Image 1: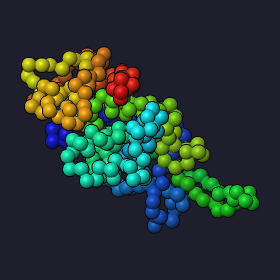
Image 2 (image 1 turned 30 degrees about the vertical axis):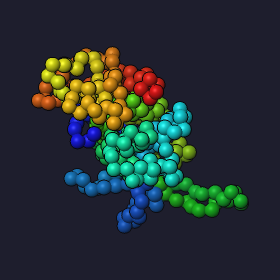
Image 3 (image 1 turned 90 degrees about the vertical axis):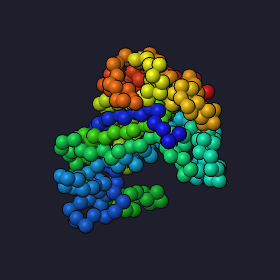
Length: 296
């Protein structure tokens, strides 16, 4: 399916800490002024800075999605550590359509060792000034109730904003719904990121700034209605790849209806629609409402 581009969604967002935030670096810095547990850093054109790795966000999003899917049906999200994990179970399968069709819902969205995921997260870098401070902690022995280790230092971000984005390509509507549900859970405090979640760390606001949608112009005789967003399954019956709808296990009615009507920008073979924060809220609400039907 990655041989063609039917649709894509780019969500641009800002991450604002609502409680102390710490994404731990896995190495010890040669800088003696930094705390024992330092925030992950990288070099940019403006020098060294703290940042939120895209891999950290993807891991948090996938973990929540898997728990939601298993709540609905135990088979909808595989156990990545078991022999029945999709990557192991389909290791000998060469037909990419069968790999996608026979993968669990979580792997169809986030990928496995035999399947490229539909979603990609960029690293989130500071917008303006980010304030950090040092906090101290100790480890308490459960046997003696005395200090077993510490005190140790933790570098935390307490204010500021990180700018990032994610891209969802060749997606089905249910995948958009799971993404919207996860963002909603983050903003409501049910999903936290980073270290020390049981210490009160890691609660953030993920504020969507805009959502950019590209929809392929498959058939010049058919215009995608302004108030609709099509998943990949809706495009295939109109194209020369119509046989793929069955081989990949897709739905021909893969459409999201009742969205704000926007005049799209013509990009040759694509139509681009740019939704602001309010427009994204409507998309998210409609996609979440469609989840039960689309996952059936």
